[in-house]
Image (cartoon, rainbow, N blue to C red):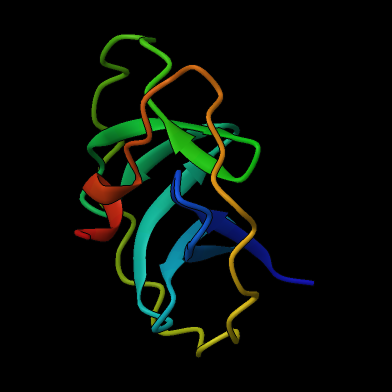
Length: 99
């Protein structure tokens, strides 16, 4: 089963495979360490919460470094729109997926 990541409007913008986050085109764009989300370059972006990447005001958790390129995992298919969601924190997925 694919774990999708959604923006605040409910659109699937990416998915998780192992410790990597991929765009809907299959290209790796980020890393996941527990709930902490980083760009592939290692820059901290935000927290994974309820299948969204949110700014929970945790401060700057630093840079974890570049893990290399995990490659393209292929397109997972589109799960459709799940509906708009608001968890009280800003959606920052656009910083990872360059929307």
